[in-house]
Length: 140
Image 1 (cartoon, rainbow, N blue to C red):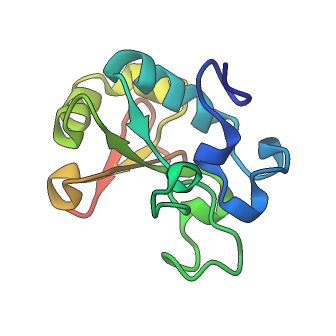
Image 2 (spheres, rainbow, N blue to C red):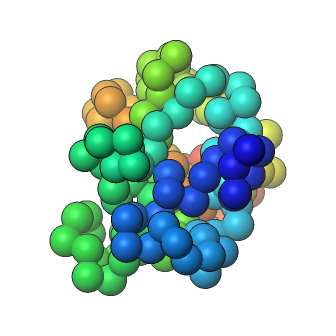
C-alpha cells in the first residue's frame, strides 16, 4: 500500500533529501490522482528509481537548488511528473490521452510533452492554460 495513493509512494515523486517529508507540501494534489489512474490503466510506471539503485531522482518534485531542468519548470512547483511506462510505450499512452482528453482533463491533467520526441518518458503536468477539456501538448 502506498503512502500517497493506492500504490504510489512518496519516494517515487520526491527526491532523496525530501522523501521523509510530507509529500503534500511539495506535490499538487492532482498529480497523484492522474498518476494512479494511469497506473491502474496501463500497469507499471516508474518515476524516481533511486530507492532501488536507479539513477532517476528528479522526475517528480525538483527543489530550488536542483540543477536539472528549467528554472520555472512545473516540476519545481510540484505540478509535473516524468513517467516511464514498463508494460506499454509512452507513445501508446500519449495517443490514448489525446483520444480521451476530456476524461483526463477532469482528473486534472492539463499539458503533456510530445512522447514522439521524448520516446522514453512522458512528461505530464497540471499547469493551467485556459482551454477547457483540452490537453495542451508541447515540444512538437
